[in-house]
Length: 329
Image (cartoon, rainbow, N blue to C red; front, side, top):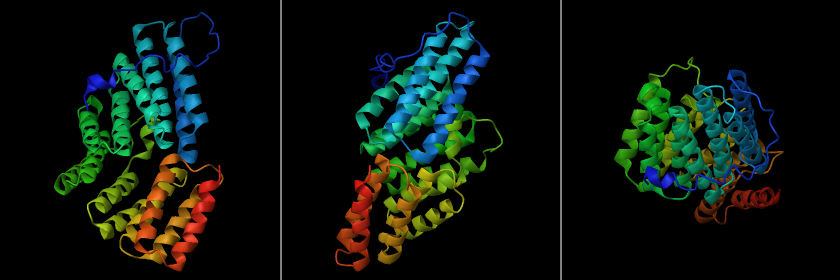
């Protein structure tokens, strides 16, 4: 994966979004703050519901508004900050598409977001985009690209300066290596992720998009890595550790971690416990459509379940619920 490839398709993403006529007056810091508060609201919505069409639409509308405002910026500094906000909104739209497993749509949005982050000269926005590229590549099973994107994230100025961002970049690399079957590289990157996070201060102001990441999320991602490299017992311990500390408000994250925990239990042939755990994942997303990533993960669980225990009564019961939950809009 090369940066120049990511700079394609940088036009047309927000142009089609209708924006209201804006009064012709110069804009300043208060406008930037107001627009950024809209990003924060979308991050909170995503934590509860996950990616969906309305979230993407609102994010693109916010990006279009920020880009319209920057034409009226009172100074170059304000204009750059507005480009940064537009990058954040576009990244949120891309993330929504990733969570909904709309892969092609997500890639185009990330190309656009990386362009905007570059124009803004905002290393934190760049870090956000590379983090999402790593996730998208993993979803597309382009595991070498996932490692490349994680390494690009490691080299952003914010990752060199703030160990929390460095830790996130290292764990993305660990996930990529685990999917490539490179156990030693995965464990090495996972070690770096834990070491750098131990140096991070959690009192520093950071953008809301990275609020999900901390000790709990690192444990959740560690569980995925360890399960992929054939250590399901260690993965289960990490999964329990994550669920003990993931905030209740992060419902989608808790549901994803619960489903991954069920997989680690299944891979240890603890069929009854695995099915009970997997069922609670449905409860965590009750009231809303199941996001695409969640559907895919539960589909993986279902396939492994019928492979390992096709005749178990509890497996048939879980499969019945799976089909019922899958059909709800």
